[in-house]
Image (cartoon, rainbow over all chains, first blue to last red):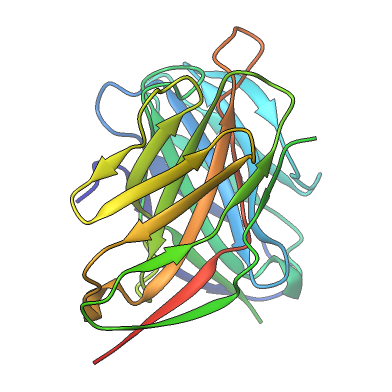
Length: 114
Length: 118
């Protein structure tokens, strides 16, 4: 157990639907990063939160949104799902805003859109 | 712009031999960090080794070492005495800077699939 918990591990849903992926960071970590891993795009940074505030945005679609709650867990919301959104979504946490002390990755949520 | 390049989509190595996985990077920031991660078929991302841009010595972690050549902007991973369990995808990643404007996001290469033959 890495200390970062992602739920669910697997998710199968239909096109047009909305899903929520959850991430609980390692105890003490304030930063949460979301990444998408797909066959054609590789590993792409989506968004970062630090202590409840959005810190950076990467290649995140407008149909996707995220937030970090006061207890520091984070949720990634994906709406109007398309077949191309099928991917492995990772959450990583770090204690610092800049990741200077390293990162801990969760085991990922594998999303399949059918 | 930041970029990580892994030019070897797939590699084979005989069990107990050493193997080098290539990684080159591009950044204009003098302060950066380089990471290697292992992703087995089960999907999780496992941290292997880290090299800071100002570190004087090449990083080592058990059977893993990093051949850091700053002038050439390369950070190759060397795995010694390969084991069957080393078969996985390997990613090189970079984090730029430490200043307040930097977020710590990682930029990943496309990965190298390593297969260890018995």
